Image (cartoon, rainbow, N blue to C red; front, side, top):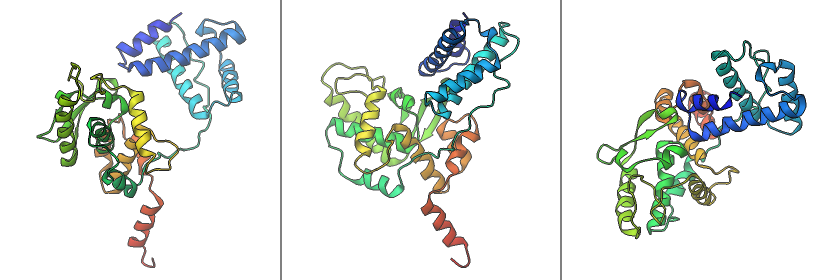
Length: 295
């Protein structure tokens, strides 16, 4: 009834990415299906807190994780805020709802020794594909950028002289990220190789391109990261986001200010960055030995 206007609001006013809007659409659609199948309701104004609780119970019986349920609840809260703002409902049925408890999940990351070994080993070929794939890993680990920021990175947004690049983050917020000389060298090598390696005509607007000159896509980044991380890491999850976690953890463990990490990662608030204040056992032991008089 009001869904399309809600999605337009998310896209235009909230400036959410296409991926995020699709996730919201999926959650709202599934909720409406539940209402129609169980209560023959299509009007969100007729939804009560007890219906919400039943819906949560159904999700739990389907073995949906508490984290995923809370994400769906967050979607509905946003939906009902939109409905109230536009006068379609007077109350939100979610105001009395207590969300399921979730286990605090620490970010997975690759330790520094393995990351050093990984980037120093000659596991990348010296052809275009090898140089490009190494650059993918280097960019994710050296800048902490998100997957979407990587695939949308434009050549014009990279300044090799100043060793900095510009990314377009969530809600179309731009930020500048510094990088080291090593990454600058690899970027230069890749750009030279790219012009001679791709035979077809290509648009050099975007930095990362396939062998056929097409813009990079997320699944390809996943495959590259998973393939190369499998050579050095036993982590179950070997995604681009693991390298973002690795960047933040290594920066923090080596003395970087939490606020600086927040700015580089593009977090809206410090709470999102504080998850990285976890410490590895090795780092805790090191601090203990240095600080305790009897250690």
